Image (cartoon, rainbow, N blue to C red; front, side):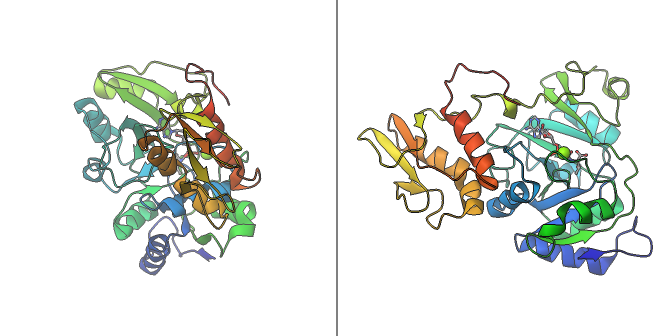
Length: 326
Ligand code: TXA
Ligand code: MG
């Protein structure tokens, strides 16, 4: 279903209310932003966030950007340093994403940051996105609303073409906000103490950033994303991980799936959405049980199972292997 208004750049209260309701139910809404259209979920609802990966058909759990309604709301999610504060004051609302240290009590599920200790946050400037964030009252995790490997959508009609199979199912509503003014994904900058690292170039340039805060972002200018989530061993728990396990050995905690019962289970019913939503917390809980090894039952290698297996492979990789695996 598409909700359009006579002037799509302006928020229509009925459509916003409906979208907020759908998000609260744990389903997805396509939200226009000034950069590209985003596929949004309640960032605190792990099942809803897992749906994003299912619909996108992403073969891996890249960390997602959390969209907030105000700089004040960002303070509940991340440790906002004075340098970050300057950048927010200069560029928010707008197409600048900041990667900051995630607060331990942030009301965001582990799947959003893909288990990383950092979190990417941004306050969009599109009137419809801002109205939706205000109405829903929680941060929204949202990658670009295209299927994996396709071009980011900058008009509602691009989304309808790309996500046709999921409309009305996982995706409850597309909010039509007209053509995106920026049309290119946000600039991503990691704030590391007094230094800035450019992770993705975008509409806000390094020069603009340097002028606004006196610090020039360093790093890869080539356009390749160097998210720490792409490092092979980044997600490794303390215990060694053995994959494709049918039973546990005496020194192992078994994480089951479907018919393979374990000490914990990703999903007793063999549901991939549930498994994706529980993956990082299961690995954490298994680690906390203090055994030497974690054995994990096989998870089917199709649909969302591809992303689950990608993360499991990283969890099982030798710890000194920091090779990029894109
Ligand atoms: O303009 C945009 O940023 C759009 C709109 C919808 O807001 N969103 C977007 O999301 O482009 P996505 O998922 O397509 O790209 C976000 C990228 C990820 O691929 C990842 O590399 C990076 O942001 N990222 C997210 N969290 C990160 C983190 N904690 N550390 C480093 N990079 C991170
Ligand atoms: Mg994208």
